[in-house]
Length: 261
Ligand SMILES: Nc1ncnc2c1ncn2[C@@H]1O[C@H](COP(=O)(O)OP(=O)(O)OP(=O)(O)O)[C@@H](O)[C@H]1O
Ligand SMILES: [Mg+2]
Image (cartoon, rainbow, N blue to C red; front, top):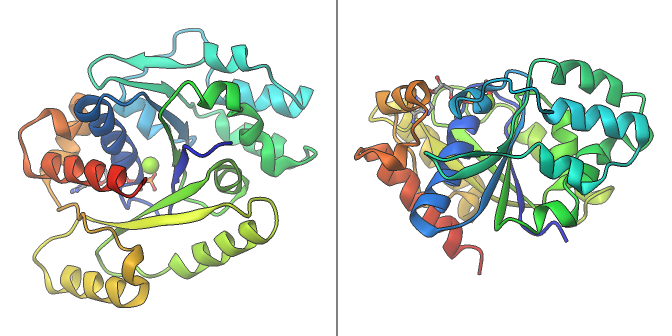
């Protein structure tokens, strides 16, 4: 069960979680014909914006969370009804909106509040997809704990800039706590170095990461590039354009598939 759910997490802001969620998902869909579901678990809704989501009267992740907090269960059809498809990038997704921040405070008083997202991402829903990726918000709160409870693996983007190592320890502690309590299966699949450039700082961080985390560091690295911002602006995944970071995310998707076996 829930063997195909991955959370893209790091409580540090701006490390390329949303960019990596979108571009790993799109590369798997476009280049490998995989059926991919992306979940926007951030009230900032950057992933939804990347996917050019416009409010359409149908429910968002906020509505699903509120339904679980008030009824304690949710039927899979309700969840399936909130799934949209983005044709250009060939990915399915559940959008978020700013009210997710309120939903988070409702969750605080719910019984078994760690498992709300897990109840939304039931087997009936997730078995329709090859892979489900959850784009987490930059905070160590209850929404992140929900993502880590619903997932089988974590992917941690790490920006190879100053203070990159800050917070990784706290995330590792949370990972251990969750493994020891609600989700013993949760593994760290790997850490993805992002925004790599030719500066001394970037090279030093990459070396320290490899020394500290060894095998956990993906071979793939993502360079710093203006193409990333352009991609967010246009809503076109990087793998659809002929650019270096696009090839890097395509390579990362291949490494991801290789490491499934
Ligand atoms: N490889 C890259 N090179 C340069 N800029 C990048 C790269 N990847 C992402 N960015 C830019 O950095 C910013 C942060 O990226 P992104 O939103 O993916 O990070 P995040 O970790 O999801 O942030 P948050 O913690 O706020 O959710 C965005 O403006 C994005 O366009
Ligand atoms: Mg983000």
